Image (cartoon, rainbow, N blue to C red; front, side, top):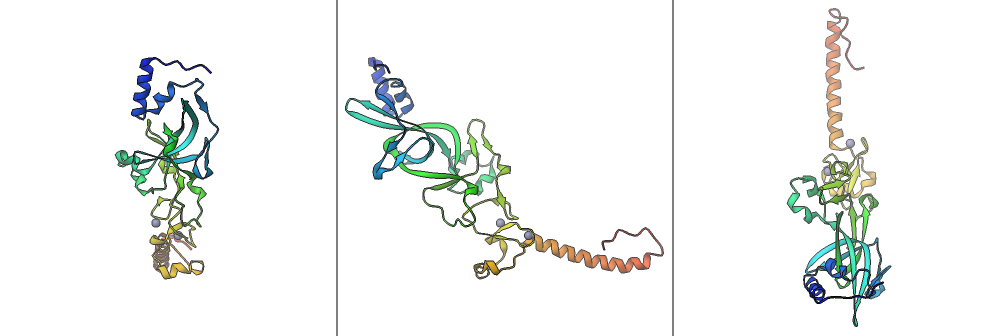
Length: 259
Ligand SMILES: [Zn+2]
Ligand SMILES: [Zn+2]
């Protein structure tokens, strides 16, 4: 630990960085000095504790930020002490507004989608709002009907420089014959024939029928369609059978019919 020695210019720059809320610069002046203390956690009102690797929501100038905590420090200047929290930023769906045409599938995401980016930001501890839970989307089962105010899910990470998702969008879980992205809040019904999960709204069943879902025999539209085609094909084959009996005497190799 070294004693902090600041020039007049330093002090000016420090004041300026604070005014701009540029905490990265502000903190850099105190790195390795005895007034900066690394912390294992920080405590808030209601005895809530926040530690690195946990997730939290912050509010800065009316804007909300979601971050995965990477570092917590305290800086003590004279009689005052300030806590700073560094976090890796999660992108929300509205952060993709400028490139939504590049990733049209993102329009199917919800306000509960978070994408961890490589960007980091320092937050003043007073801007902390609450801890949040960020789970892989598969964590939420079909029984999940409501996500709590502080519960979020993630499908992928996003590199803002490369503009790349990991895993890529075409590997994200989709259900139903409409191939929409999985949304744990949406109710699904399983097709008894192909076992695909189908949105209630895509099932063609009434609310009344869906209330007794366990007793409901359900075949999805694509399966119904396929069955219909198969049936008419079979009928067609039968007609062909009769025709071909007549034709058999003319062509012995007329044998491509299904049994
Ligand atoms: Zn659907
Ligand atoms: Zn089906």
